[in-house]
Image (cartoon, rainbow, N blue to C red; front, top):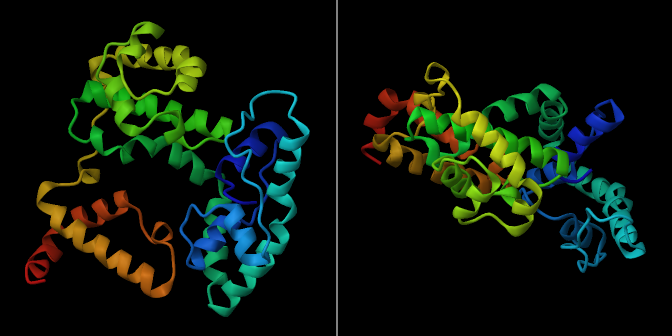
Length: 274
């Protein structure tokens, strides 16, 4: 598969089992590609074929699919084996096949997805300094967005961006028309999800005070650590570029914040001299 995150969950839901997969997107990341490299780019680079891009923005929710859409969808799988063969040889020659297999072992574990769903709201930096009642709403809406993205095989930001999500949580949403006061929601999101968004936020707004959610202190980016996080980010970029590994496979921004917070006392004195 390519970019299998959502597909794996859909197979589990509708077929009833979770297959062990090889993800060409992850393999490409260990070969120096950006983590979100398209399959079309890999097909062109690995086997010198150009795939048509005319239906990328087609409405795939409409049924029946057109013959052109079906052919386009077939192209998403027919070249995967040939692409994987090329990437596998690159991984072997670079001594990174074990790294790829270790990462796929983690991604093939369904517990990884449960943890991701539970903590997806913590990555929303705009929520770090909000009052607990608003953090409670952010957590509920972010988890709904993540679940919906998985079911519809869509990136969460395509449903709504973090800034829009937080803006919704700062309002008192009681009925679908209330969400129209918040800018940033696309017309398709409003048409498909306005009722669900309203239900999620209404429920969160009725949360008892005793059950409010606090943003974890150890996951916040402390002002005094901004410089250290910047230094760590530069180090990650240097290592990523030097070794030809996509930085997303090394560490994400939340992990950098956590490292900086945990290492504050030991590392900050040394960092002063850098």
